[in-house]
Image (cartoon, rainbow, N blue to C red; front, side, top):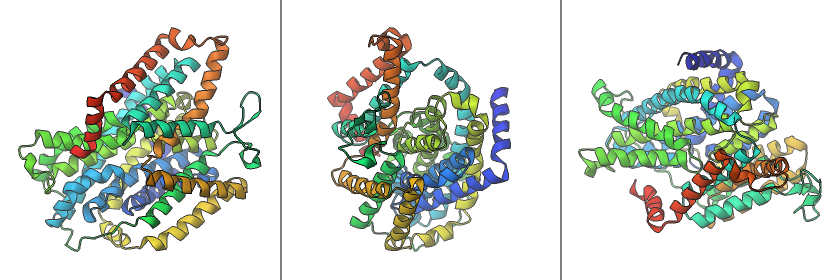
Length: 501
């Protein structure tokens, strides 16, 4: 316990430098902004900002990107409550009762409970990350190439199992991602693979090109093709701070939401997104008046919002300790670390302790900033909701193109991103979720590298993956998860998780 707080104190000394406080503030502000504005999520924003991080130091860059991620969770609740449009997928549940509270003149109370619940969850999860970081990193150091290969296979299987929608489509997206990661020169022989004679593909496809294309340009195409109507509340927002009695009534929901979100956020795939849905289902099940859910129950806002923020932060655990990104945002964080020359994994805590603990401690500072940014400035965020999307997208497109060109001065990268943008729009129309593709792409290269290393060490024997107890255990867990997911009754329950909420 003492070591945990000692590490957090060291992290605070790093995070509280003027430069890192500034990056944390910028991340939280931008995150709130993209969370408030429907159609510009944290995935697209982080993808767009990846080139900018090239000119920043690694700690400041990661603190800013992390702030965008959990800041968007805060901002998403504002649009969910006031406009009935969840700015983020994780705020879908908040819109159900939050908007009904707003229609009854309790918009301020709903926003206040969402902010307090998110801050409470963020504080608890920050301590949890610090507590488990050491043991998880020690476990990660025991992993050899065979164990890492099996761990990544398990991660990809969980990404399929927990993905929203069709299992077959999730598998297809992961395979496409893995195939795209294999484009370019072979890492051992240098021979070209799947380049089709195109010079721009000889060095492979940059992750930032795929991320900015599918999540940046693709999001713009989607919003232009299917604009969402915004019916902004005209009623008074009302008081923001709950009374002591209201806080006491909702405290249990915040604790349960934090616990659920923290556990589910660690899971690869849609773990962080499942948290608010599971929290809503639990609150409805244990409530004395479940028939009122959907009509403006405060626990249905406090619980899911706590789960939402807890899941966003706990998803950093597998990334920081094992180098395994559990969702698309964390895959982008891997891209940001690689751009800075940092190899994600258990070595980060030993080689870059200031980065590791500074990033963890900055989450608590960021959560405190978000309460300050969100509640007093709520009037400003409401005004921003009135900005038409047609005025935003030209600036976003220009920023994307300048960012892509600045990476390597290659016009081909801009063209490739545009093609991936169209591809992302086609995926949206065909109801394919692009997040597994990003995971497949990031893990594809690591998967190939670890596979080769494991086979070289074992003189080409594939039995190395089953003779190691740890590797065998991970493969068995993956096989069991896949087998359970394809059972008809489980598949039906999986689809109903989202509908039930």
